[in-house]
Length: 117
Length: 120
Image (tube, rainbow over all chains, first blue to last red):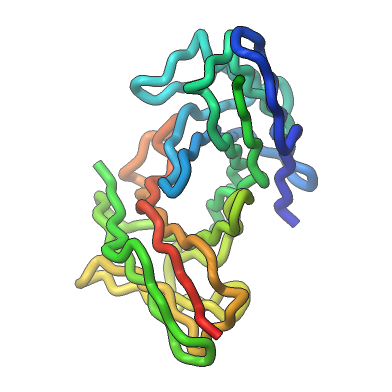
């Protein structure tokens, strides 16, 4: 159980275009999902917390108009990188929070490698 | 503010030897502690967690971790390393109630990661 998927796994796009990344909890409902960014050989940097039915909470320094997050259902959150630039190239990872009955754990998706040309 | 320190960027062990990956933390109140493993170009896989109870936590793939409150540590261990254990390991922490107020305070704080290499 507790499987999280991401689509696509890899995307290459031209500078100036927008890219949407989907994060799905496959066998559970997640009221809270998280979006992270990871640069090579570095730790995960939390970008935003996505709450179903409400606006995302962005971390300091993350542009909310550039990284649009929509958590439309209890099993789906999307991250749209708008007007992508080469510096947005990175590994984006989502996670979904499972809580209740003495447990509170984040389960991570496999990640999406974004390359902006 | 909560924080995690993984003092070793890299750990090298021989196959069959015991391994330890170190982690210390700082958080208000009692911690939730986690270990995750990341293979190249993949997301993080959950290994184990400590919430309450027994200080020795057993997880996936033969890994275990010991919670030491006085030393604020949560070191990851395995009695006999395998070459396939070679990967990047992350320790993470967040506060338990009542030291968080919901919203983005559910977030985990990660260490910088330790690259484990198990040599044949």
